[in-house]
Length: 315
Image 1 (tube, helix red, strand yellow):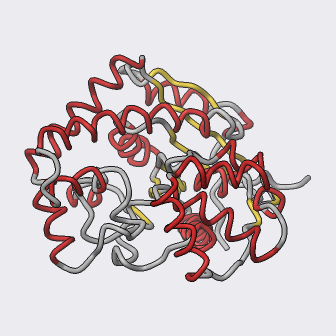
Image 2 (image 1 turned 180 degrees about the horizontal axis):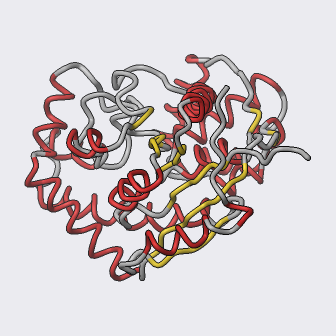
């Protein structure tokens, strides 16, 4: 009789839904370690704007793939995927439970679905041309180009995420094939349980706004200014993301702090809506109401089912 495959637990959900607190409870209950599945938490020095788990939270449970590179270093999806699979294997070798936690849907899908990611070297000259086009014609024009050559990728990529649109165009330019066709699926040898935390939209928006207000009290603007003064420019992928790009008009004297904060709240609401589209497509997904106080008990009931029972392997 073939031995069951080891279990991977994934915790997903929109920003501010409560993933961090729940993941800490679950990891402590299951003797687990957490693998961060967040494209922004890999950057050192970007703590407040990314809502990075605090040092105290990271001391409670070991976290992997946080503070991996400096804000000006490239960290591709392929690099992340390889590092995450290595972290999962390391956790399993210690007879502990790997728990994937994060809100970057593309990264989570790449792990759980086993994407075979095309290894296409960056073409910086081509990227510069596309960036110039986006600046002069707007991001919608660039996204329309992608729609023409790769409708599937265009559907999956937010038009405002210029970096990802450019990467998809770059892959097509370099290989002659749509990135959606190159991203083949080779499901990894895990059993998967995906826990999708949800809240009513009005409550989620209120929590997002409270989080942004907390970020301001914790010194988000000072963090952004410190990064700029260290030489990390606004054009970097790390600095053009949510939580940082919104303060560029303040730095340039074009908007007030209040206007930038309002824009950050608005953009985060929009981001939270888009996250759900990724999570709904993930394998073995179970929706959980994050408002319930017995979430841990609900998950332990799921884990009592034979198809979800944790299996620890020593290699």
